[in-house]
Image (cartoon, rainbow over all chains, first blue to last red; front, side):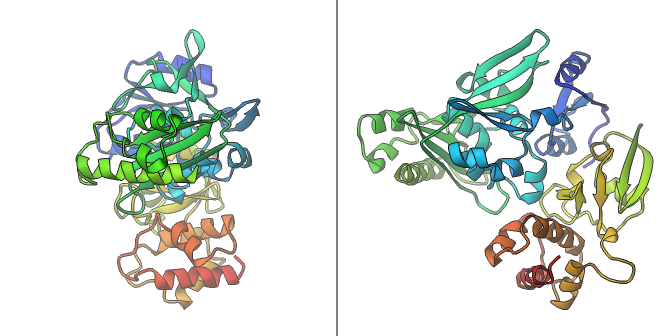
Length: 269
Length: 154
């Protein structure tokens, strides 16, 4: 359970991190480390260089940016839970963050790490997809913005180029929103999670652990937009999904959970 | 090897570590602070919980190099001479341990919890300690100890 040897560099700025990533094609970024270190310990990941961005405090913030809230990528889960701006304008983020891991994990884990890891069981990844968030990244040629819809490319695969660093997550202010999940035990990843929010009057719904990436429940959204009551719309929750069967539940069980949780979430909006 | 300098239980310390050295192993093997136990070694059980800059973390899932420049407190750093820390005293008085293996982690997690929430409800205590597993006590006496420590105003 000891990781393979690696080189270690601590970046003093985002630009330095970008340049360090360019030094080694097997380099990986280390933020809070609570997705990466377990993988290193199992030797599922064996990067030759770790670039530590955990001290870049300029990426730890939550700011009001007009019709959006801007969240620095290194903002920790515990900070998302107690942030007053998020509580006022996008409370489902704090609600989801409060359910990630346990207090020790929330003291270390970051929103950017959780999203950039590309894990289909990530609660925050589902939320940014559901909210059509914009993800600001910096690379060798400067900054660009990736829509959440384009960001999640596959299981543990994102649209980030090898030298790019996720720096900011921009979410809309929502009129209402919630995040519900079922896990088998305390600390577990979501067997299924559901995000639902009312954004500019439109209801948007996303699913965790129902496929290789976080997914939007498009059938549900269309039904709600067409005036269907929650129970009828929620019946479409598993349409077009490919949930896994694993120790936490079969695909059929997950499909059923998705329908139940979507109905509950819609009833809360 | 990477040179790190940090404060552990109030004392400055410098050491050369391999970057892959985990904080739990650094504390136990290089500093010989064996109060921090390693249980599951997979960031589940919480036996290795220490304070990093005042907040509870699982030291099996933090590299020692990440603690460079930081302030680390282990269970050895709580007592004031022969006088137990109020959380330790409460665990003792309420019989909040049986085999004791998980206890250093529970005590450190409790110190962090009470700092963030000085008067937690029973439910908040149970949720606040969900990162720590005890296989002996059934948790009831641990909850009572945390309530007693909160009353003692830690």
